[in-house]
Length: 275
Ligand SMILES: C[S@@+](CC[C@H](N)C(=O)[O-])C[C@H]1O[C@@H](n2cnc3c(N)ncnc32)[C@H](O)[C@@H]1O
Image (cartoon, rainbow, N blue to C red; front, side):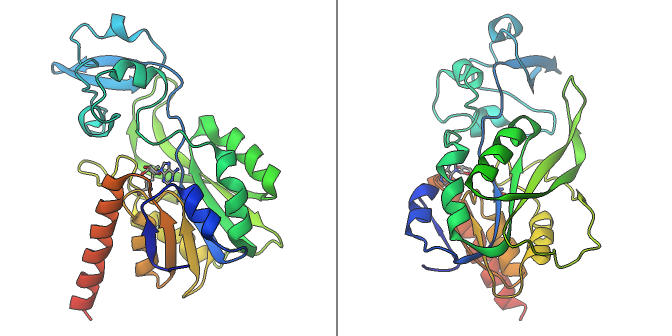
């Protein structure tokens, strides 16, 4: 097993090659369907502003913004052009089917058993998830043997529109593989404030490095091995490098894999420069 490496492949393949009990901690921002159906379009300054929500898109899209693949969300990121299923001329049905992103088809039960298997005993597993998918994720995780440990809340320090209360947090399900072990800093609270990245993101769901570092510090020690099955633009890898942990993981998208590789190389050369 090569350490400090992201494999550009389906995580199911990476996990299959990994031996039992070889990882000290799992931290992963996992894929899931992000909407149940439809998108509501509102208009601001002649631009379409999308709020995820059930509606007949054709009635709410008089300016044809959806069919042009342009949805602008309130934090200013243009998810329509960059991140919707690439080259899809059928944006409305992609939206209706919950396929805002290209790779979010994998089911929890397709990777959870192997994640449990590769973790050492007495370790922690952190999975980022939204409220809608939390129950299913916890159920599937407990089926494979994980113990529910806590529900952490990431306070994003920004808000996105939602007609059932503005969205300003994300959940992090904390699980453990028995025997239970304390976190390193037992004074830590389960509300984790960390400024969300706004504007030019490397990945549509890029997480702050500091947020991941907080979890790493609490659930691993120097030189430990951290697994992230869904690396995106490599945030977990950067957090590991900054905290002297080893990482291993996968990212199925060639685009984000390349961004992650470049980010890691830049980080290593910057660090060498200042040594
Ligand atoms: C929620 S994002 C993670 C973003 C990450 N937190 C970051 O800061 O960049 C989930 C990632 O999982 C990837 N993915 C989806 N299915 C996958 C699979 N079967 N194997 C590996 N990666 C997958 C997606 O391409 C996406 O980049």
